[in-house]
Image 1 (tube, helix red, strand yellow):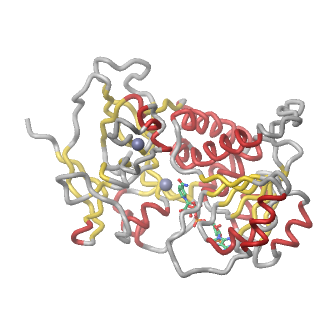
Image 2 (tube, rainbow, N blue to C red):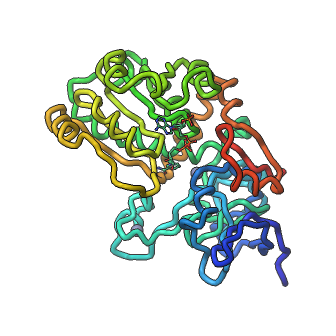
Image 3 (cartoon, helix red, strand yellow):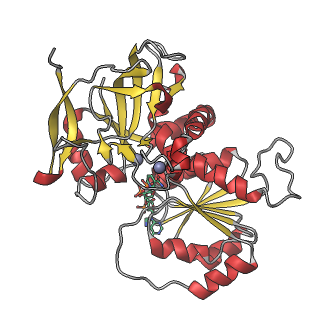
Length: 375
Ligand SMILES: NC(=O)c1ccc[n+]([C@@H]2O[C@H](COP(=O)([O-])OP(=O)(O)OC[C@H]3O[C@@H](n4cnc5c(N)ncnc54)[C@H](OP(=O)(O)O)[C@@H]3O)[C@@H](O)[C@H]2O)c1
Ligand SMILES: [Zn+2]
Ligand SMILES: [Zn+2]
């Protein structure tokens, strides 16, 4: 039987085009697969970059790649071997799929976020269609269940997993501080510590929320001077907003005291390495940014290197995430919603129909998180 054709948002690299494409509705072909109706797909810088044709490879045999990797869906059908999911359940899919190299230990253990061969695939990014279409089929192991009361915020689970993975790694590193009392009287592992989040976009704001629920004192250091709506959200969650246009990094460090953790979320080398200069004693610097390669920039390399050595500093990157990070992200979104319902609403700038895709992907970036709704 011929499959029904659905509309999806695709890029066609050979024609350098971004367009609505016809895509066949997929069917369950293995017992452990689940058919999911797409509810919402978030748009981020990665999607916008794919639309410049910098990367983004269609699956073999297709000339288009369906976009979309930040997705919330609803189960419509389950394969005969599926346990733990049923029709009507809300789910969030992960993005990266393992490489095929038998010797790649992380991929063989379901930790393709650490793939050694770099031949992994990614839904909506690299050789696998994304979720910006009406229906998709996925193996149950790549889906995480979402409580029904998080229907309005769960589209942000995927971008939050970056913070979950970043923080998990930071705490692994900080196990070296064996004298620290990790729960700090129930006030969180970050209680009494200072964190600077660099950048107030969706990655930075979600990272700041995660750091706040871990107990940190949080400062968001970002470009635009106050007043602006990102600063308003920052202050509504109990963090402090400081503009890099008004306060240099030395002054920032003087105001804060020891900077125990930096969560970089700007994707801009110059300001990121400038801030690294003032990372504190025993501090951890988490990079999330993925800058486009530009010209060489001057950095205070000797000063930074000296500090890394003498102050026992650690630097980690965070990309993609584990299944556990998805579970943690969904749990934390529940906590965010309880603590800051207004801010969580404000993070979603707008929900749009599929016809708005060109403006959202090719027009000027606006607001914080724009979402395409399929309902
Ligand atoms: N690791 C991963 O898996 C992953 C996943 C998704 C995204 N990312 C990366 O994460 C980074 C942040 O993403 P996003 O979507 O949150 O970005 P975004 O929406 O572009 O936000 C960037 C923020 O950084 C601020 N900023 C930019 N240049 C600055 C500068 N020179 N000094 C101080 N602040 C500056 C901006 O300030 P204004 O408000 O004034 O514009 C804005 O608040 C990007 O590099 C993106 O590629 C990584
Ligand atoms: Zn994204
Ligand atoms: Zn691998």
